Amino acid sequence: MFSSIVVGISLVFSISAFTEEEQQMMNALHAECVSETGCSEDLISKASSGDFAEDDKLKCYMKCIFDELGVIDDDGKIDASGLLTIFPEDIQAIAKPMITKCGTVAGKDLCDSIYQTNKCYYAENPEAYLLP
Image: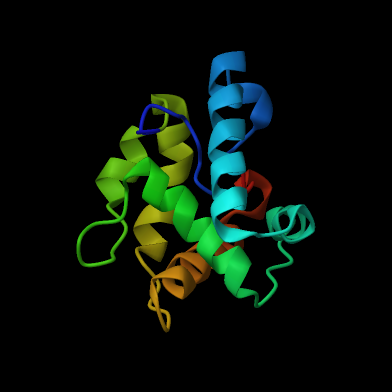
């Protein structure tokens, strides 16, 4: 449904790289996932800066973003090629090494797996990471 959004899921590279329409769609995605999970803005903001709280609502917020983008397969794995196609070509070059290296990090459940994967993305390139 939001697959045309150029959201870095959690690895958005620069808000300024997005058009106003893309930013509005990102904001809608963010609002939907906050509403669905009850995650606080503070936890999301801190995670964007690398402070990943061990919080179930934050973990499921991240899963919601990936879910809404349609990049989680039936086995609970991140569809790396599908994820990459969301980005413009210039950003794909930055995203591909992170996405490839991290794959889907195993967690205790799907929310935790997506959370652990986001932590991996941040560890690989903290300057390029932003959680919508």
